[in-house]
Amino acid sequence: MGFNYLSAGGAQHPSGGGWVKGGYTARFQSSLANYRTVKQYGGGFILKMSDLWGADGQSISQWPGDNGDWSEYDRFLTQLVSDLKANSMTDLRLLIWNEPDLSIFWAKSQDQYENTWSHAVRFLRSNLPGVSIAGPSFAYRPATSNTWWTRFLQKVKNDNTAPDVYTWHLEGDNTMQSNDASNDLQTSHDNMVNMLNSYGLHVGEFVIDEYANQDEQQPSGAAWWIANFERWNMYGLRGNWVGGTQLHDFFASLLGKPDLNTWSATGYYGNGEYQVYKYYASTMKGHRVATTRSTDKKMDSYAVVDTNRVRILVGGRRVTGTYQLTIDNLSAIGLPTSGSMSVHTLQFDWAGRYGRVDGPKDLGYVSHSYSGNSLSFPIYQTSTTTTWAFEFDY
Image 1 (cartoon, rainbow, N blue to C red):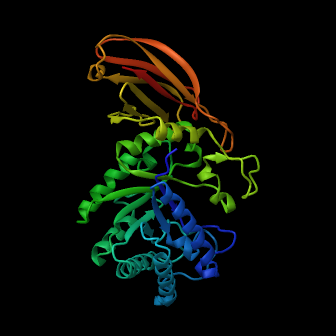
Image 2: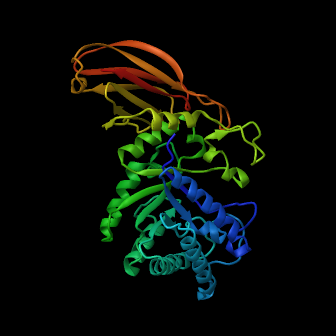
Image 3: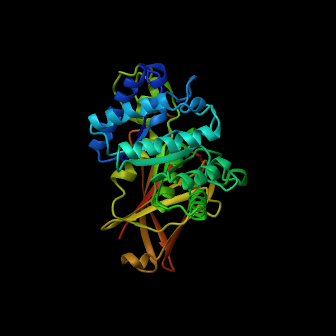
């Protein structure tokens, strides 16, 4: 499967608790290993500086800028810049702080966070010219009612410390209800554009550096997210919901192995969600064509046209029910406007986070009649986890 992006900072490393606990070196070496791995595959890398500091959910007593004193944070930044240069680790994006809007990761005032952001950005841009800064990586989505976002945008505008890449997380309520409608790429993307425009800030690249709740990390949810990121031409990095050594294992919960509790054990295999990403990256070749999700926004699709085959991956956001898949404008690929066609179906099953699934189940071919330059057939979503791919030749 493809490997396009990775975010890491050595969080919860068993050999070190970060800078403030004397465990910076172990976390940096872990991050360096991650960086080198993703670069072998031509992917991008986001370095979580707050994990290197030690703010990964553990209890720490020292924070940048405590009592207006930046000396310890400057020592940390100086060491980090030195290590990045010494290891030619400069083709990356630096994330100042991860989820500072959650008290478990930032226990100080909002003012102190904002000052930490600008202090770090100025230091890094002065000592690493051309470095790419990512952020703010808030847990909550951009909205004019969210003071973490409004104050951050005003601060970076005033201080000229805006990030090169805007990042945020989509791991809230996934029922698509009005109480958390912003936990959706379309809504949060548009909110971000509108807010940047209102503050006179440049609208550049967006990256969702954590997406999908645990219950969405299965075949149907994966396909739903793929369709969304493709539609908006954005990168997304799956949230990693395990801890300890498992945080550094299992390819962010896409793999399993016989011995789950020993980090050095081998014998890895893919789970059901892995097979969806593998199909997407390895089989869905050709050019992307436009798709529209269901009116309730809970079912979506991603489609490509190859030299002689059309492939469509569908997925739902923890939903059951009957949905209709309609394929329009068939004459654009040389098919007659009416007739019949044979559609090949692949089923992606789910056996749990560590359940082995060796590939999609081949359900064979079904002949469908169509007319009016359009083919339509139902999708019976009886499970919130199972999903399908449909293929036909032309």
